[in-house]
Image 1 (cartoon, rainbow, N blue to C red):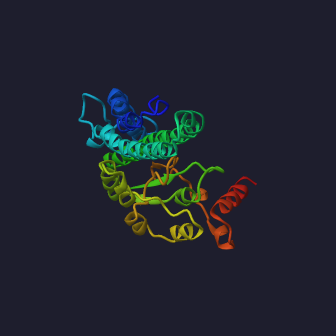
Image 2: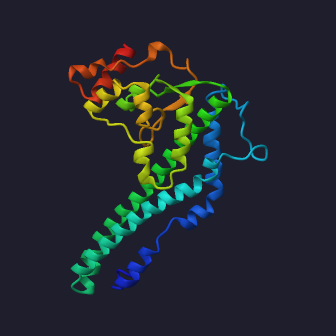
Image 3: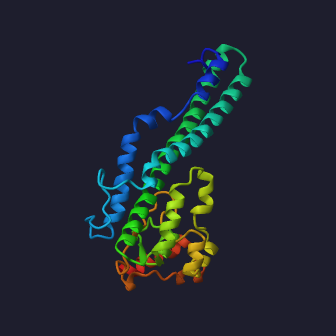
Length: 279
């Protein structure tokens, strides 16, 4: 509205005021419930689907601080995403203002293009919301599973992945891998308390999906994977990997990445293995 009227200062002031804060505040209770559900879901992986020992329930035990802080941690990340949206939108307005020759030119030529660019910027913010929510709930599920494993005295765990054509090479390589509970529980707690999303590149980095990266991943020992923060999912946004008791993944399901040695790309190697497994 302000841009159409040529009120550039007002338009920029409105953009600078964009924030997720009211929405997050209104949905704080829902976010807390979702976080708790993700944690309990993770716990259920170690109890045949029923949470027993180590059970966390409102009014019976204090909630882990990672769950309590989830809404705040997500708010920080989302506000950083919104800042990127604000910057992109302001750049669009600056371009439109510079291109302005008269009100008719702005209305007929500049405004449609500006609207498209603003929609792209805002859509990016929406994607950031989905990504932040997905990664946080995945980490909380891993946290719940590892906390339950510790409560039950399990010293190790396995990673299990959904194996289909959508499964990336990293997840296929991690399927069935075994790790110690202690280091993983400590690291996921630290990750969930990380308030600066930029620091996640250190506490839980994404594995390299290149052919060389997959080859290196295949040769890493448990200690090397732990050191790199690759001992637990998620390994990327929308990751479907989960933490389960040892023995959940039979030895016959372990992934052989030998097709990579034939010069195939990671996706081609995954397709070959699926074809062989289903033939």
